[in-house]
Amino acid sequence: MDHPNLIMAQRIAQVASKLELQRTGRSPGSVSVVLSDDILVVTLHENMTLAEKALAKTKAGAAQVQHFHKELFSNSSDPLRLEINRISGRLVREAATEIEPKSGSVVHAFTTGTMVQVFLLTDDTPSIDG
Image 1 (cartoon, rainbow, N blue to C red):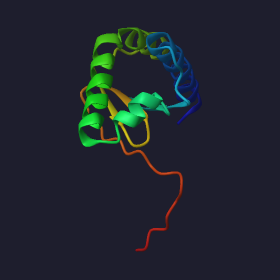
Image 2 (cartoon, rainbow, N blue to C red):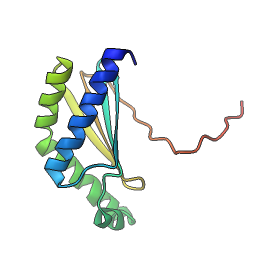
Image 3 (cartoon, helix red, strand yellow):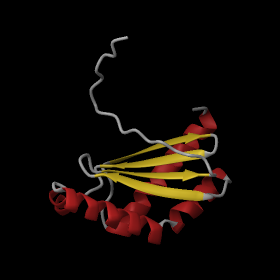
């Protein structure tokens, strides 16, 4: 990531954390932002409450938590979209969110019509045998 994109990504991460606090009353553990061409991916790490983590232990509960976060994002992402536009100078054409109940990470993807595949990696780095 070049220097201007790095600065934009840092500013978007700060805004995403602040808006999450305003929206839900809690801040994520950390925020990662990847900005590349016409794709912006914001990952809110450790973003589930203890109640959500407990609920997500079952398949039905995990589905409820995922549905809740999708609806929350759908109904309250406009301030983040506006901030992305202000910081980057580009409009968000499409946005989607996904939560990984096991890790508690929430991923927001903002694109301009591109298919986005997001992979959340583990902390350890296993070797790849070729």
